[in-house]
Length: 272
Image (cartoon, rainbow, N blue to C red; front, side, top):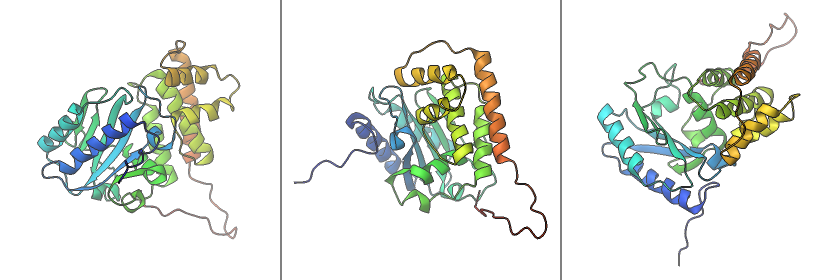
């Protein structure tokens, strides 16, 4: 007698069932050949908090999606009953050509944020979105395969400077809640310092041990973990983000020129 499959990542049974249902919708989408689908973020590496965490998924399809088909797919997934354990589905759909780095700036076919009720297609951002390389790097680093081959066979490597540039671009976004922005900055700082990709909460806990007054980070952690906390001063938040952006900029600066005769320098030669 066959038992139930093991739970995906660190999800609870309700979140697991919801995610499997969404993947099945991706498989059955008319006129769409699904190459693979991958879970990354807190549901894959830890700190998934039921009711306050999203499911982060990248789906890779064979061919570009017409706007109507992309929006129809987004509508079907948005209408899938979502359990309390899942705050929302953050889904990005890209083509295989985009995933392997054939375009200078990656573009998406569908970007769906169910919690915000927002769906965008390639026509909404024809120039692409440089931040997508963050998702690709996370999938390669710790992504869980929901469909298709392993992520290292689907996504091109992302070099360090490109990844840091995408992190800096995200820090400038102001539509996110203040505690999200603070913890994103902590997570980004850890990558700049140690080349480690981690969750917001893990990044916050790492950062609070390295700053003189961790009050702002502690407050952001309370909001992320408990859903409530002290009011974050917006000026203090912006000052913190400016400091972190400076750290990312310094980390992404090109290395100093090696004097002649001092030996060869190393380079990554990666795709992005």
